[in-house]
Amino acid sequence: MSLDKGAKFPPPPFVRSLEHLVDFVDTASLGLHWVGADGTILWANPADYQALGYIADEYVGHNIAEFHVDPEVIADILNRLGAGERLCNYGARLRCKNGSVRHVEITSSVLFEDTPDGPRFVHTRCYTQDVTERKRMEQARDRFVSILGHDLRNPLSTVAMASERLLGAPDLPDRYRPVVERIASSASRMSRMIVDLIEFARTLGKQLPLERRPVDFAEVCRRIIDEVCQASPATPIALHVEGRVHGSWDPDRLAQAVSNLLTNAVQHGQLPITAKIQDDGDHVLFEVSNAGPAIEPDALASVFEPFSPSTSTSGLGLGLFIVSEIVNAHGGTITVRSTERGTTFSSRWPKAGTV
Amino acid sequence: LIVVAEDDPDLRETLCEALADAGYPVSSARNGREALGLVRGDRRVCLLFLDLMMPVMSGYQLHDLLVADATLASIPVVVMSANWDARRELGTTDFLRKPMSLETVLRYAARYCGGERRSV
Image 1 (spheres, one colour):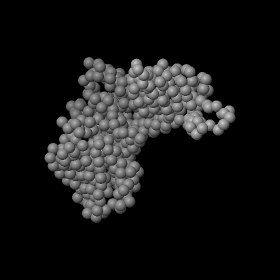
Image 2 (image 1 turned 60 degrees about the horizontal axis):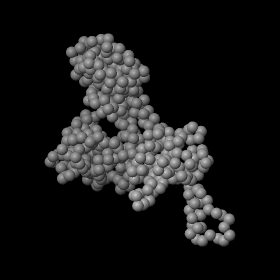
Image 3 (image 1 turned 30 degrees about the vertical axis):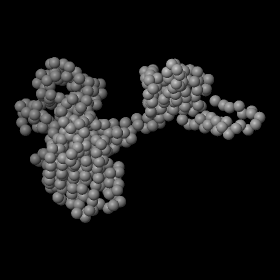
Image 4 (image 1 turned 90 degrees about the vertical axis):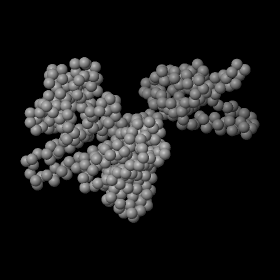
């Protein structure tokens, strides 16, 4: 795409503007192209074909499907565009001239022209972003999560069960009992850290997936309180339930959020610790309070940030971040207030889909 | 008889020793195929502890085979996995999330094989 640069007189301002626009498009790092209704590439900027290792003649004039790895994907793209849909960051794979594959995200819509016979498909306006490196990072992250999730948990299971077995052995010498208890408690702590890290890695840049079901908030909370109190028998937790506290939530995620909030109170607060669940119209209010000194304002401001050093359920500073991700995914909110009299985490959970 | 299908040798042996200590007869398998041979070959099997990520034949594959086989479908299966979502994928409630506690393992053994114990 070029303009006549041999013009005798300086071009009028609008032509100079057009030259600048062409220069802008030709030097863009984002791939841009137009495709006709039959899939033929009508025009492309250098970034578009050079990213695949082609020159203009090897690309423009060819059918766009020739460059897609997955025929069903480009067929779907063209069908949707033809129907007037606007695509935003549609994932696709393109094949380079050397045979390698690039992952791209395509944003595209069709320029339609009004005619007496109705709208005419002029061409697509397609912006192609190469996300190959990001995909590679995501794959590395998935592998990392897999290592955390599977490969590390097997040896950890062995440590946890072997120490439990030793603690149950009547002939374990008393002087070794505290040693084995420390092994068991460290294995348990490491297990919580792994759970938190997996959740953190899974939520990076993604909306947390939910499987909503009718749930009794109080029932989930009672179960988690039992678990937390079993692990910390010296720390009773009082539960107050007001009204009907049923809603449509992901029971596993809800349990995880409740567990993290209660464990946080047990680990960082002082007695008494109370949990309150209250019917609040179309929401359920869930509060966890503990006595203890006020959290410093700076620390309070970052309490829901990942790797927050101020409070955490795991030693990694991810517990409350995960809570806030779970609450947000449900469309709820969470806040914290802290004074010399104690600290309270208040979360509001929309009942949406209550049955 | 309890069958433990787990590819991690340390975990497999720890599970087998703990169950044997509690008085249960135990056989172990390093993968799904070995476990399938054991459950097909012995009618006394009262419980299968099943890891999911195993070589040769995965726990997922074995689970599908057991569910589809009328003669084996009644064998209780407790799935052991680090992946919480697997519980939903397999539609099972008998699930041990790794790292699991010995207490929970023994509770499952007592639930399904209580009568088989030689001694406690």
